[in-house]
Each structure stands twice: as C-alpha cells, then as structure tokens.
Image (tube, rainbow, N blue to C red; front, side):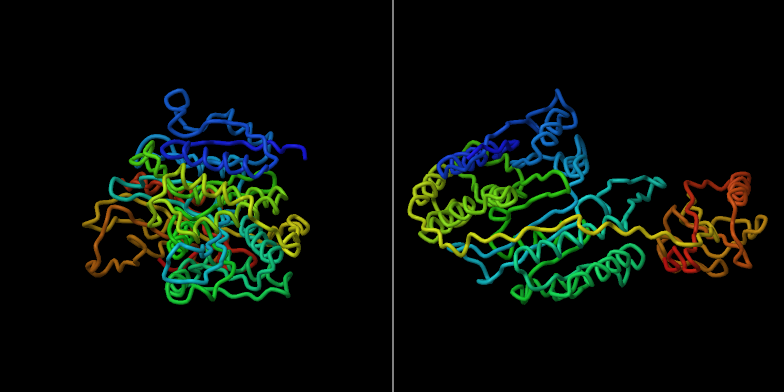
Length: 464
C-alpha cells in the first residue's frame, strides 16, 4: 500500500515523548503513513514569535492532515494558542471529542460512549476584545447562521455515519436569546433533514448536571465553542481524565488531530508521560484517512494492555512511557479482527448548500452608544437630537432610572439607547449628529451599535 503523507508536530514539554510512542506503535502496526515533521510551539521561539511558522501551516495545506502533540500557551502574555491559530487559519470548524470508557481505567461510570461536537472558530473564541473603559473589558460573542448550520450538519452526518441514534443541541438560548437562539434555530432546521435520528436540546447548565448524574443517556452532543470547551473536558473527566481524551479538528479541506491535555513541562524528560490521548487521537486520524482496520488493530492492543494492568503512573500504574509503548506493540500480533467490524459508513458533508438568510427589509431604528463616565454618577445626556430620542440608560446591562438613586454597583461603562419616537428609519447622518452633540457636551463615547429590524422583527436585545 502506498504511504500517506501526514504532518507530525511533536510539540513541546512531553509532546516529543508521546509523539515518539505513537510513531513507534504505528510503525510496528505497519500503518502506511509517511511522517512529515514540522514545528510549532515553544520550540519555534524566538525565531517565530507566533509559535506557528508559516511553513507548518503550508505543510498542512499541502498534505491536508496532521497529528499534533501538546504545545505550551503562555498565560496572560506571549503568543496566542497554537491550537486556536491553526483552527482559524485552516477553518477547522468541527472539534470532535469522543468520551468512551476504557477497559482497565477505573471511573465512576462504566458504560460511557458519547461524542462532543464543538463549533471551533466562532463564539467568544474569535478573540475580539477591548478595554472599553479603564474598568470594563468587552469580548464579542459572534454566532453565525452559516457557521452554526455547518457544525450542526457535521454532527448529524457523524451520527449517521457511526450508527448513532440521537443528537442533542446544548445552548443557553434562555439568556442569549439572539446568539444561542440562532444556533438552536439552525439546529432545528437541519434536524428536519435527518428524520432517522432522534433529537433534543438542553440548556448547558442542565446538560452539565445530567452528564454527572446519568451520562449513559447521551450519544452525540453539538454546541457552540465556549460550552464545547468546557463540556468536552467534563466528559474527559468522566472516563479517566485528559490523559485518555482524544480530539480532532476537522474542516472541509484539512484536519488536525491532537492530544487535548497540556504540555506538562514539569514531567517532561522523566519517562512517565502517558501517550494514550495522542494515540487515540492518532486512531481518529486513521479512521479519517480510511484506515479503520489499522485503527482497530491498535485499539484492541491498547485495550488489552490496559486490561492486563499495564498503565502509566497517572492511571494508577507503574509503567514508564517506554514500557507502556512496548506492551502495546507486543500485543499487536495477537489481535484477530472480526469480519463484521470492517464496515464503514461515509459521511455526506457538503451535499446540501448552506442557507443564508436574506431579509426582504432591513431598517435601522435606533442606536446604542457606549459611554465612559464615572460610575458614581449618571451621565447628563441630551434627551433628543433631531429625530432621535433618549430611551434608556444601562450599566452592566441593568436598566437605570434617572429619577432615583442607583441600587446596584455602578462601573464607568454605560449604554445609552436612542430611537425614533415613531419607529421611522434612522439614517447615518442622524447618528453622526448625535455623536457630535455628545462630544460637544463633554460625553466620552467609545463605540456605537446600530439597532436593526429584520422583516419587521427586532434584530437586537431589549433586555440588558
């Protein structure tokens, strides 16, 4: 069989050690892969301050698939996460995190077999943040119709390809009525195309509670980025921790599979790192490449090794990384593959075009102006400028009464809402006139948000 080129990023910390273990196991299993080694993370500093050389990105674009060890992300300083940078550069919109009970790994729950499908490039992870005032930082949460449709369709196609029975959307649409509300709307629209699959939806806090009480009820979960980051780690904890948690980042053209745990520099070089998470991620990679039988051989050998009590220290054993790797390799030869497990079910992504909503009528009916003003007092705002009338003032989302003393903690960040009295359209020159009036009155404004009606329906929140 001709070898398939795959980019290998060993990472830093324990990354090189566990990557070596996976390479040895794949070689012993005669996996037809040719490794194309590239760098990312601390090993690239200071020659590449971003931690992600363009050469590495281009290699993944060329060969389309990569296996990545953990890389260190500095906290509060330095380069941004290499993982996030790769996902955005390659549009790896689907983060797929299986959580499955492993033999020989003691947990509170014996029969977990679920998959978290996390939207990977939108939500608060777009990284658009500002200090609006010295005391208030703002981060934008962006949820798009095309992005939500793509991740939801991926979840349903994955469920169908694996013979899964149920897909549940996880959200907070009771509070984030527009953003998470849009995600849930897209989920329900796409679900109609898959009548053979059961559906449900849960608010994220309820989902968290149910995961730690009855996790066996879940099959495939799909959710926006931030919730997915948290819930996927929760699910990893249910089956033994991040040391046994695989992950794949998948787009229409490229895929990067990685260990989702940290680089653990405190144990690097000591020979005690657990390669299981990266190995399981490698098995995801093999199935992605159509090498399901090779993946099954290695998976059976890993299970046999764990069942026999050969485990690394983090799983309660005494085996070194080298001994654990050798034990898996020794058990590769005694696996007999049943014929029925050779079946595959291809996914059908992209068969149906994405939907874009194009309203017949879009009207600006007002504007929110965000102001910096000392939190101890209310700003003195003009009640009317041209056709725009003052409607409301909020502080941290709480509506204030200008006639009464504030009963809540005030910070130096206010939002003033102006709208036309008769609901007529607001033009740009009306907003410019308002901003000029605020400036001449000594009001320090930071930015504005137009308030739109889409086909007669509010496209903005009336709460908070």
